[in-house]
Length: 396
Image 1 (cartoon, rainbow, N blue to C red):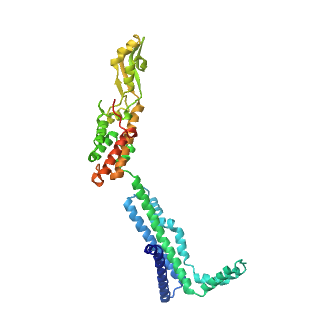
Image 2: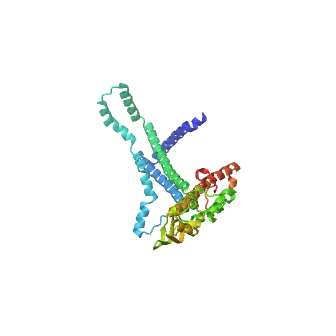
């Protein structure tokens, strides 16, 4: 019951008390100064608009200081002055609240005069209208006549109107600034750690990003994750666990030497000159180089020397092909695919860490802020990010 009272009844009572208080002050001022009521209302409207403008500018300035926006531009003096006026908080205040300002200054109208004019203009006109509902007509006439003879009630309604407009005005300013603050917080939530933005924008190398991740995740005590980072940095060994994205590479065989009566240089060679066993080895080739080597080799050729199979080619071609160089050249697309996979995994891992531990640019996380069960879940989730479908595949 008390919650209903606090939520619905008390605000109405407070509003009516405020309206009565304003009416009392108006009567005192009019009695003391002899002003017309319209002049007093105009002064109150002007004073209220100045106070509300001051409230808007003060809070808006505070928000701008918190956001740290730059308003200095390399314009001429006159253009810069024009810009400052154009972007001033006062102009923005007028733009954002022009409708409520109109309603506020409309309160300058003399309701008593309006009611008096009702007798002269509205009542004769309304008397000519045929109402199907006589009760409605009688009630309308009675209400208008009642207002005409009760100046205090009219003034109280006037006071309620003024207070209502001011209340709406204050709320509207709060809503506008609240929306600005919400947008700011929304941007803050959208704005990830600088490390994540740098990786996404290719502002740092993946090798650099992996080194930072190694530092950030050290306190997680996730040995498998640290092993993956170490392997990506230094390169994979024969007995290491090889991720799927480093397998099944695209390639072509090239050789330089003699083909019949012609000398050739770096031309394609068919796999048909190799035995099935060698073909299988070539097709199951895995890229084990460190991520830094792969990044640097994008602009040059990455290849594996196959000169040991030159006799096999010579024999299979019945002496038609003599290889001086023979190599398996990795397609650039395969290297880009590895880099893309590592980049995506890095971002996914860092996003998960950021959502749990907050901003990561200090290269440190506090594992004490979560429970041991939550820490275990984090570690398992991070491992799933490394391998396709959350599975680890053993090197065969």
